[in-house]
Amino acid sequence: MGSTTILCGFRVSVIALDNFLRANGVYETYGKPPFLKEHPDKDPISILLYNKLVGFAGDASMIDKNDYRVAIPHVQGYQTSRVAYVTYAWQVVWAHREIDLEKLPAEPPEAFEQLRNEIMSFGEGLDDEERIPDDGKLGLYAVHTYEIRGSFTPQELIDRHKVPQYCDQCEATFEPSENPYRSVWVNRQEHRIEVHGSKQGYDDMPEA
Image 1 (cartoon, rainbow, N blue to C red):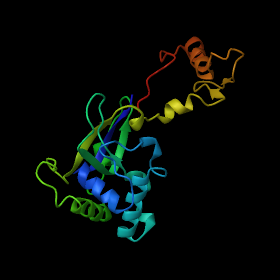
Image 2: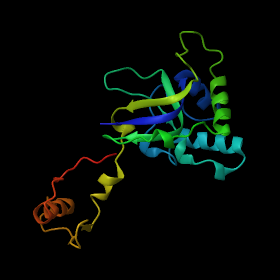
Image 3: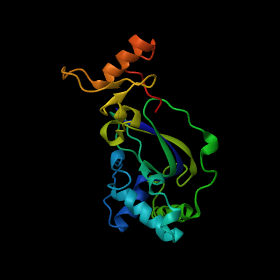
Image 4: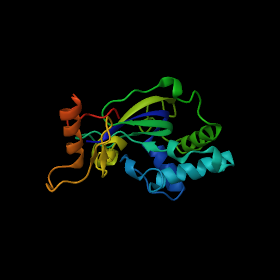
């Protein structure tokens, strides 16, 4: 089903980004999104961005590798994107969640501005057909990435598969039952409904 990323960063033509990647020994995207689940330690693009930023900042402790990645829009049935986004802050939306605008960085780090200038320099020779509107513009963007490349599992859903499970309203503990088709989470939720009158149901949608 994919996911949507709310991000602070800049937009750049895929051609310019790919020129930058190629010059630094990383495979081009050709408009295909990186795999979100590989960020930050397995995605070559994320690793390159982090190393560049550390070089610009001169101090690795000033750079949080989780903040910097490339997001590329992808929608089923449409050709690959001509636009990519480079982030300095981001949050994935799986279903729905609050975005506190006051907690977003007011300005990008100085090292990020240096990175932006370097990436944009690889688009200086592009003609008008290859450029995108507002190339290089910093802003707040929403980017949807369809299917497996945008696949994201909220921590709340991951936690539902942990064993044992615990009731949050009493001291009841739930272990696997003899029925292999009945999850521990379902047993927990059934207990909350029958004993505590919960209206949450069995598969409450997480705010994530």
